[in-house]
Image (tube, rainbow, N blue to C red):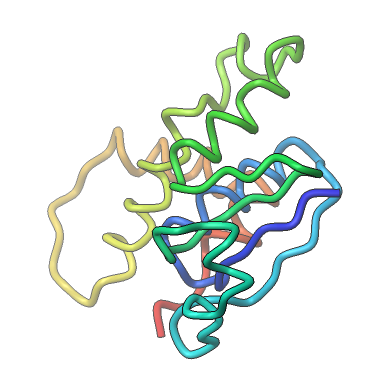
Length: 137
C-alpha cells in the first residue's frame, strides 16, 4: 500500500492525491508539513533529504517532488484507457490544482469560457472534488 506524506491542503500533495484517487490505488496519507510538522524528524529526513512534501513510499521505493510522484503514478496508467482517451491526462493535474486556487481567490476575473468549460469537466471527477476543491485556509 502506498504511503503519502503531506498535508491535504498542500498544492503539491493535492496533485499526488488526485492522481492516486483517479487510479483507485490503496493508500494511506500521513499528515506532514505546515502545522503538522514532522519534516524535521530523522524518520522523514531518511525518506526525503529535501524535507518537503509530498513523499510517496511504495514498499522500498521512495519518490519525492510532486511531478516525480505523479509521473511515477503515470506508469500505472501505461496500460489503462484513461490516459489515451479524450479525458484526464497528467498535464491536467498540476494545472487543475493551480487553477482551483486561482478560482478560489476573492478577486474579479474576466469571463473565460474555455477555462470554465474545462473546470466543469474537472469538477465532474469525484477525485478532484475530494482532493483539490478544498478551502484555502
